[in-house]
Image 1 (spheres, each protein chain N blue to C red):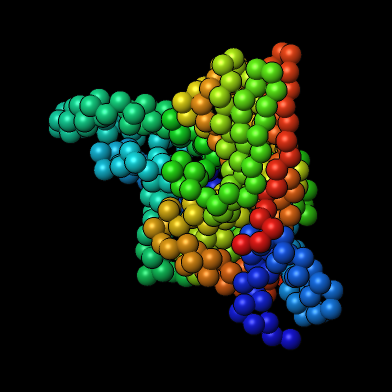
Image 2: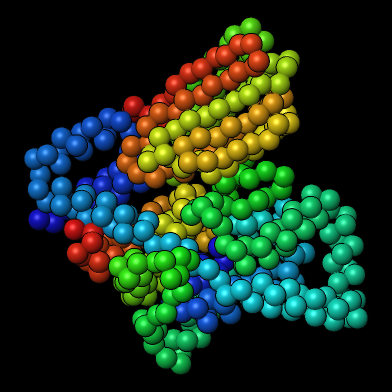
Amino acid sequence: MLYNLGLRMLGNPEDARDASQTAFLKAWEKLSSFDPRFRFFSWIYKITVNECLNQINRRRRIEPLDPRIDLPSRENAAASLEAREASERVQVALLQLTPDHREVVILRHFLEMSYGEIAGTLTIAEKTVKSRLYEARQRLCELLPEKAA
Amino acid sequence: MTLSPADWELLHREVDGETTEKESAELQERLAREPGLSASHRALLGLGRTLSQVGLVDPPPELAWDVMRQVRQRALAGAREGWLSGLSEWVARQPALALASSLAVGLLAGLLVTGLSGRGLLPLDGDSISGTLLPLDDLAALPVVDEARLEAPGIRATAVTRRGRGLVVVVLEIASDEPVDITVEVDPSGLRPRGFECIGGEAVGGVTIEPGRVDIRQATAGRCFVNLATLGPDPGRVAVRVQTGSARAEATLRARATVE
């Protein structure tokens, strides 16, 4: 899950690997700051999202986001070319969203989190989650017109 | 045609299954006579389908090993520097955290290697699969949609559906003296079982979660939460069956409020 979160946020396997690995190690080292009143996985998702945002900010200073991707599919050889192309199209569209919009789409549609869970993970208000999600979807409808229409 | 912000919000709430039955019925009438609204609705539904078709990706197999190797190295280095012993002592003073963290560390390593077979299944947290990141107090405070008493010889229970924040929660209060088997069935196209938590009692015979159905076997008196993710506009209804070897009680509950 952490890897997939990183992959969709960052768009390439190498960065996703770095982000998930760093997030895990940070969680390990910061265990003493974990508040047991909250869900453990909400906390570690938050660390992963923050690590992805850090990577995006670092990369922004160096180079623009590269929409080219090479996603190894779960079904791999069995995956149809069409499904693979669809996955890549979605990834390219995701990378055209702002990070704020991308993260809510990923948490809602790929991790199937509820509004409340997203709000808790990102430490933002539920109404902010909704407005970002709604704007992001409308943008995605424009970016993925033939499938969305 | 440009939609108003209120109409856009209504469409988004509809595709998220957040509208009431009354709002949904009114929207369906408008969709039939407003082509612009209908086109936007179709676009949002199509987008949801497109995104749902994108599967999980396997992480590289060496990732978990790399992480565990680094954890070991840091643990050894930390032990030399003393921080690990301090951390260990702190964790040891907090049994619940020690359990959660040890479970989580093992599970995370597993997740990094294998991923999860079901999309959206949120992982283990404590001794049950909660299926949600929200605290139990939040689930218990969601607005009630429907409720029913389930009674038969040897069976005393109530079932309540609560809804909000993108979830439907079935709360079952078991008051029977003897353990009971509980089955919760939903339309798999409208709701996805995400997890369960038992408070007070326990599921002695285990719990099975599959598409459209959750079986809690030999549940003792207490409160069980069955957490369901809304998948689309119409969550359908929730069928609850409670039974012992000789008796059975059942009820069907609404998953969406008729009005707000």
